[in-house]
Image 1 (cartoon, helix red, strand yellow):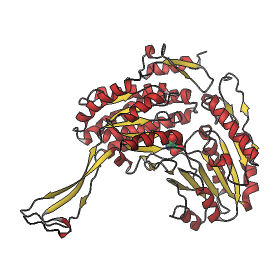
Image 2: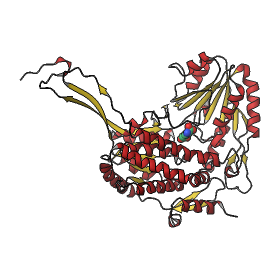
Image 3: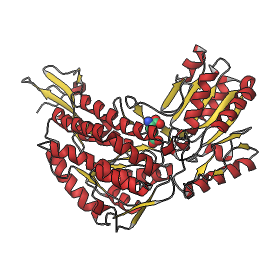
Image 4: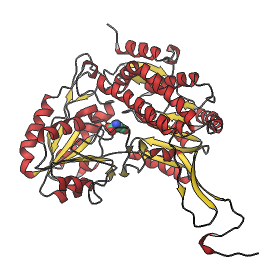
Length: 503
Ligand code: UN1
């Protein structure tokens, strides 16, 4: 029977990653599915960041002059290549990040979707024409490429988040340098090979337009500190973003930060409880709680609290935990550190008076080296201790509330501000939740869970989530610089604000 290692390596070859790149390097890559080491890849040497940025910088100066709709053609070809690679890349995501086949494929679909979006965008990088107070003048804004855009991505969405950034950055006329998580270099190498095929099919792409850096924190820091990198889009923990954001700010470079979430949902008495149950279950347990949008806190109105929690516990008990490749809904945590962080959050919740349901390790036959857990549901009486932190694991803290305004205040009363939702059929509650006095998050949903956003909306959040926006809507503006142009087509020189200066 083929081992996971064999399947991964065959898949990589199919995706265009040479077998010679999978052995002999210093970075061991292990599948969270069974703990098997599937490759040893070479890390980019410390000097490699500077060399990669130099090449990208050179490429950027040519790429910026390619008309945006032609740049869109490159991204169309990327989408085309991704469609052809969907099954293989989805499988590799499942093996390297431990996702179910459906979620692995969903991640590649998210890449394809953002490519389609970016192709359309390539003809819509609109600037405004602005009314000017001066006669025979015209005022407008134009959008120009930034130069080199750095991308730092996390293990949990190892390829989709890169695609959000890459597709937009390329259409916007930038070169890209990508530092993926050191836990998921293989999907990065495969995605990069897919982009390289698109580049080969595109006649006028400058050499070195896209660069890949494999390694840990040092190589990421070298990229962040390189003055030729105009902007960095970083996805990951708040701790990482605090360092990256400050280093970029120190040299006045642009940052797009998408950091930790501590997402909440409110279930009100008028809610469709069957729908709420399904929404909560997917958002809290899907991807084994390892999405930045995972539902981590739940506020249920006291009148329905006990019955809803009883139903939720039954859902928690019935969900299958096991090898995601065999169709189990809850797959593994990424590694042992993640498991220990989950255990310590649960211990600390118990110390704070929490009643813990689930959360135990599950030994999966044939996958003994993987860290599988039953998702945990923790009944809390108040929002203290670990409830205020993001633990990247399937832990849902459940609390009762009495009035809706209190529930909104509790939902907002954490340092993070990524995603939120309310389950209600009361129009006043729904509208209040999405109003200025409602959720303070970057994503506020009604009657759907906190996770699983489409690419068409701007994605990101407030407070310690970092404030950045990626993906849809006008997030492209973060990858360009704006110039305001005032053009005088007359023979006089009127000054703004009526100032006179006659010489
Ligand atoms: C992330 O976990 O970093 O909205 C991104 C979602 C996905 C993206 C998550 N579309 O859950």
